[in-house]
Image (cartoon, rainbow, N blue to C red):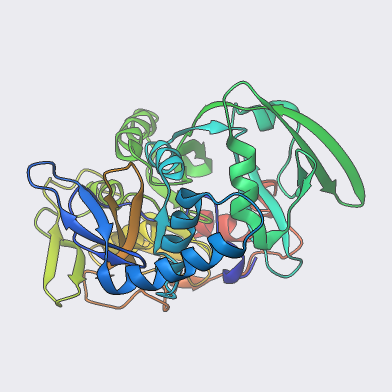
Length: 397
């Protein structure tokens, strides 16, 4: 897959900071700080408010149907933030916010699949069903194309809408139409609470440990530590960290993991805010993992995955990066909570590698470039036929 395919990759947005106070002006509303409440409250703005009131009066006079002011206000705010032309900034409704935070902690109600927009075909492709999920139990597979959910047709351009349609209320059943090669198949899949497993591990030949990290949701660091201890007990002598198709997650989870492979007090990450003030994140603990490491990356390795990759590589001469140039998402978003339960996600800072290299729209170039066969699927390919993994094994031998 090319880089564009993953712009809307499921769970690819970085969550780094939750806060409850902001002063901001949006469309027909201006916001002021509620004293003592720590939330943002909004009131009508004189200038912009009058403009929108003119439209409101005109619509009320001429529109045949019922007017839902709350829905119109939400649409107005969404449109205003979209006017920033920043693919990562957005207004999040109360309902979306609840779903958003559930996903941030690695738990949500749905069928349990990772999906992406195949921009070449404008189709929604299942990257993989989560292990133990309703989707896996029902027989959905990597590479399946979702064409309909509950009778409604969806394309790659409407991936967000399809994602929302797949979640809904726990216990309900999603009717899903799938295109598998040239065959149209129909599945009924129950929506349940799904717990996301961040890491899969194994021991390969020559005592090579293998850790595939799918996302950096809350709890990923603790899971990594646990999995590392299990691999260490099996007396591994080297380690492969597979970050291919990992679209990111919570930055601190990634820096905490990097801390385990970097000498204490070394720089892990540099971030710069709008006023250009830099903040440096350093390793706080003694280095725990001392062995040759290969990091597997591809064009869909993004944000927190790039932070982890650069943080380890630029502090450790015994690390080799193999695969394709990474995505290049080097900006950080902050979520601000509003008093009504909705929120605003804004790009608030840019990050740099420990050596102050730019990541945004540049990515990380691997030490050894190895192409992945276009006709294969990362989640279904046999290990013996995976050229990037095989190269990693060769290097570590």
